[in-house]
Amino acid sequence: MAGGSKKGVYRLMLDDASSVVLYAWSAAENYWTDNSTDPRDPFAEASGLDLLEAASLALAEAGARAPALLLVDRSQSIYPADIAIVEDLRGGTLEAMISSDAGAAAAPLRSVGAMLNGMAKYRGPRLGKVAAVVAGSAPQDRNAEQIVLDQGLAHLASVATKVPELGQARERIEGALRERHARVRSRGWYSLIHGELGADHVMLDSDGRPVIIDIEGVMFFDAEWEHEFTRMRFGSSYEALGIDVELDPERMALYELARSLSLVEGPLRILETDFPDREFMRGIVTWHTGKVLRLSGATT
Image (cartoon, rainbow, N blue to C red; front, top):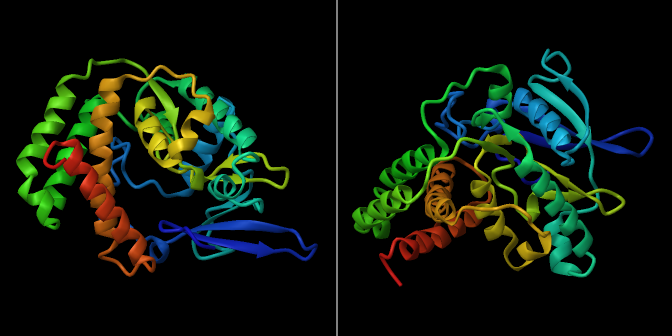
């Protein structure tokens, strides 16, 4: 199936004409190279069966629906990789419904908003991937805004050598990152977030009910990190979600710039592999290069 850049995703047809989806985690099907695997890094490699299981449980406790886990196997005796079999969702994406029938999308949008509201209120004792937090294996010496600043600066250093416009504006962009970070006031709690939730990460079941997919990156972090991305990806449909979460505008400003830098750095890295949909990745790089320049004041 299309869409898997970190794991294989396959639809399996069963003898009774029903279907399920197989996830398979193997190095051969992961196009993301050189990712951090440090368990303390909430943005480290978000791929693996342990992450899927922990995220699925936390989302359910927060009132958010993910694909039902039907089978998990780590033995590699059934298939030469860790695998999970999950329910098959055949109703299409919420993104497609918004494009084809905005009226029909109203109810699923409200349901997604209710899930996001519940996730924001579901607090964790510290930040990190859910599996690491639950296992107590993710001690932190940085808060969320410091992690985002550090990542933003690292991404800037990387893309400045690859994108001439960003290299020329590097000092201006770094200054903008540091200024936005300096305006953020520290905070001591974290919400459950998906991290990359757009309408393309919401599938519909046969009854038109929404289900959040690609959940391995679910973590405890600032809700602002979630909503900066969700606002961008849902666009004009964001208001229809009915979000009832108090969001700090200073965090939103820092996270918006840092996120756009990540959406230049990540696609550039994946373009160094044989990932097939290269024009799609190049389009992301071009769009977010322009956005970084605008947000930092390097261009109007």
